Image 1 (cartoon, rainbow over the protein chains, first blue to last red):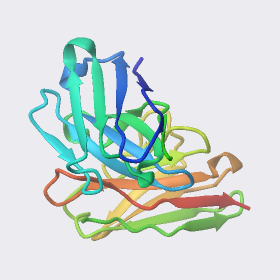
Image 2: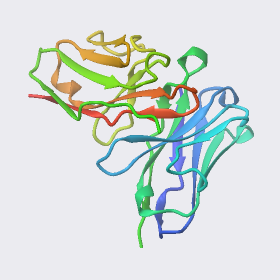
Image 3: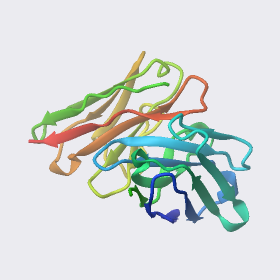
Length: 121
Length: 108
């Protein structure tokens, strides 16, 4: 069974940094592209970033480009999101989501339960 | 940046049919996917590749596509279908994923 468990969220001051992690299990991690998606309180889903299985391709939403960095460690079945220069508008629940294989790309077929990031002084 | 447009809300009575639309310039080239999200829960995919239904999703959920618009149809709506629904696709390059703004389905 596929499991995705996010961690690393918390309260951080504006301008600060935070690193989110996502532990994956139940599938061949190295074969799957992964994404981060966020949801501000009471708002809709916003795609944040994508990384291919071998880390060859990385894409970012304009709202986070230059501030956030996606990475993965396939030996540890883990996905990361390094968030720098955080702003109040980055406050959200951050979800780790697996991308579907092949013709199912770019669907997001499995999601974690999310980790809350709050940016406030 | 690329956008997908959904109506903010749709209301139907139990047993009726709910239709939620999603429009975007790249939809003739890119498949769309639909997710259901209930309060406090992670999203769950209910339709993939415009009209395919994942295993475990009730048959009352269906999808269709016509030009720039895709539609999620829920036939015989039940109280448990009350949720937020999001369409998702990619821009014309296929690189950037995008979500619609979401539609709140209310079962009267």
